[in-house]
Structure formats: structure tokens, C-alpha cells
Amino acid sequence: MSILQTAAVILALTALFAYLNERFIRLPTSIGVTLVALVASLALLLFGSAGLVTQTEGFLTSLDFDALVLEGMLSFLLFAGSLHVDLGRLNEQKWPILILATAGVVLSTFLVAVLVFFMLGLIGLELPFLYALLFGALISPTDPIAVLGILKRLGVRKDIETLITGESLFNDGVGVVVFTVILGLIGAGDHGQGAGGVALLFAQEAVGGALFGLALGLLMFLLLRSIDNYPVEVLITLAGVLGGYTLAGALHTSGPIAMVVAGLLVGNRGRAFAMSDKTREYLDAFWEMVDEILNAVLFMLIGLEIFVVRFEGPGIWAALLAIPIVLLARLTGVGTTISLFRLRRTFPRFTVRLLTWGGLRGGISVALALSLAVGDERNLILVMTYAVVVFAILVQGLTVGRVAARIPEEWAPERPAP
Image (cartoon, rainbow, N blue to C red):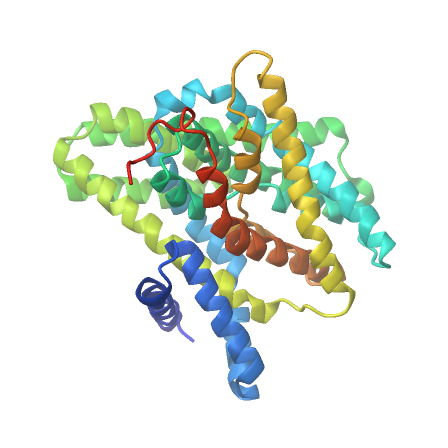
């Protein structure tokens, strides 16, 4: 199937599932599209002809989901997400966000790895500890895109919304870096790097990505400021994202972190000092549409990926164990971080609960799992990852509104009147 035909099938399915959700179910688009795609997939697996099931599996296998997400969609999603984050509000929350996105991810990675390693052993499954660390690294980053719309409608205070958004934008990049480092250790075998080499690689990816993103954002800022033609300015940002992400990979720095930093610079300094009102209007509309469309596509594909996940035998128990383990690690990481910061500042008592239950996992986790080399370890990690992601989207995503609704009025003064 050609690239054009593949794109046509994906967009047609996404549009169909989005329409069915909007017409009959009316859930938030990301959650609704995932649900419709998952139900359609299960119906096809249970009642469809063997030939149609085989064709669908072949289509999804040839799709290369991990490359589509990590090398294509991720750059646009991270740039679009950071473009609309208020840098002033982000600066006010910078230390909690920084700790949650770095130390929080690392702590969660190790907690998940230790618990998964021992719990799988109790049910007779073997997963080497480095692979357990890989699972911890790919499942620790959060993806709250599906839940942010719910929180906005409920009027959650902007500083908490910024905390959730800022953490997710940066921990995506940090999680990919940690995953890459651990994968390098597995590939190196007996010739693995020492602690110094690991620290250097982490710094090259994370710090290098931030510096590259700063340079890229500054370049786009200077180009935008020198002209006033909104089609060309939108094109500059589009080229900057695609070309910058590709160049970051060639330079062995973190593309995700680079996109977040560049998006923050363009979205704040660029919007204030380098764009006319007309350009701001069109640029915002363009990237909001890119964000909405790509998220709908991504969550639709997550629903279809059940065709390539093999839930069988002990793997089902591993999937069921992974869900509470990941939630416990998330609760521990968030609770520890917020407790430390409560020594110097005040957080509402619902903060830990909301950050824990609202920390959804998404397509990046599935893509990282699918990027692993074929083998028993990959199969086990993929089953656990898919179970956690689907639970997060459908269960946490559908119930986080109840958690937010219990927030006291004094914490959420921006709650709209009924």
C-alpha cells in the first residue's frame, strides 16, 4: 500500500470514529475515538472473517507505529502543546515541574522496574532487570492531552493546569532520554558504559536538546520578526519543527526536549514581539488544528493496535499487575515531590490525587514498546504497556472529572457558573 493510500485509510477511519463519537457518545475526542476504535477492533477480532482480520493485522504491522509517532507526530504534538503554555505561569511553577519531570521520572522508572521484576517472578514470568527498567522508563512519562479539556471545563485553577501541562511536556522528553540510555546499556552488553558514560550521554541528550531548542526557537523568532506575511510565517514554524527535529536526531540530542523549548520561545516571546495580530490568529488556529487532528489520529491508532498485542496466558496476569504498579509508582513520585515542596510553599490537598489520577499514558509509551527488538521481552513489555495505556485513557480519562469536581471552591475560583 502506498503512502497516500495509507494516509487515506488512517484519516478516513479517524474521521469516521470521531464522527460516531461526536454524534452518539460525545466523550472528549481523544477518549471517544480510542473507545470507538477499540470496540470496532474487538468486534472485528471476535466476529470478522479470518481474511479481513489478517488484512487488518498486515496493514497495522506495515504501518510502523513507533516510527510514525516518534519520528513524525511527536515533534508536531510537543511544539503545538508548548506553543500555548504561558511562560510566566510556567516560571512560577518551574521547580515543581522540573523535579516532577526529571527526578520524578527517574524515581518512577526504578520503582516500576523493581516491582515488576519481583511481581512477575512470583507468577512464573522472567523479565531481566534492565528490561524491567525499560518498561519503567517508557511508562513513566505522562500524556494529559485527553484530560486537559475536562479540567478546563471544570475550571481548575490555571496554576494547577500549568503544573500538569508543564510536567507532561518535559517528562516526555526526559522519559525518551532515559529509555534511550537504558536501551544503549542493553545493546552494549558486557561493554556497557560506566556511571560517567551514562551521565554524559544523559547530559548530551537532555541539555543538548534544550540548548538546540533554544537556538532553533531564537532562529524562528528572528525570521518571524523580520517579515509580516502570515502564510510564510506559519510555513517557517512548520519547517522549523520538522527540520529541527530531524537535525536534533542527527546531532544526537533530544528532539522532544528541543521542540518543547522552541515552542515555548516562539509561543511567548515570538507571539509578543515578532507577530502581528493577524499572524497570531492564523498561527494559533493552524497549530491548534494540527494538534487536534494528530491527537485524534494517534488515539485512533492506539485503539487499533490491539491487533498486534497478544493477550494470552500469563501475559494477561502481567498486564493486570502492571496497572496498579504504575499507579503506585506515580503516586509515590508525585507524593514525594509535592511533600518536599510543601515545606516551602502551599499546595491544595487534592494536588497529589489529581496529578496521580490525571497522569495519563498515551501513544509515546506504546510507540517506545513497539520500537524494541522482536522477542519474548518485547512481547511482555508490549502487553503491559498497552494495558496501562488503555486503562489510563478509558478509566482514568473518564473518571478524572469526578476527582476534579471534588476540588473545594476556594481552590478553583475560576469554576464557571452552571
